[in-house]
Image (cartoon, rainbow, N blue to C red; front, side, top):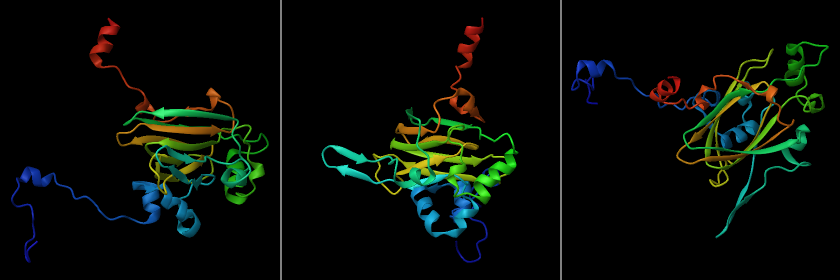
Length: 248
């Protein structure tokens, strides 16, 4: 812009100029990016170890841990998921009772959905969850893995956007938004992810590639544990002309 020039847009019509908005290219703080625009999963893993401010936005009970993918020239790649007696799952005492696989077509999404926390009968949800995740977060033996669904997820192919939202009674609402790479995209974003019950989660396939994932659950599949929130994106409605014809 030349000195003294106050308006770059004098050369466009009033109608167009009135509709203009400027994009904000500021990256924002770490906390802002985690809760709003999103962050690479690899950066989250590093922040959990080295940046105290991440505690303000990290959802209690969520675990994100690095995985190493080893290229095998002319053949493909190899990567471990998790070991029962080592690493993140050993630390928190969680080993799945069921393993499953899922494929998400490119440009599709899942969720939001949430699994209900199990609350002992002699206390309130607020008191129990605060005891579990605020006052005694390292006492993993208190967790009721047999009675509530915890998820651990791994991505084999594609790139995915994860959005987590804490909706547990008595805990602050926190949002974590981050991006995970499948094993076929070797990077620091190859991670495993643990999601506690009471944390609503959604997944979007990013880009033109199908997403393949494997996930373990602390309980076997129980339909009653599957609560859906704003999940209409999963339903592909028939064209209105088809619906009209079928209703005749």
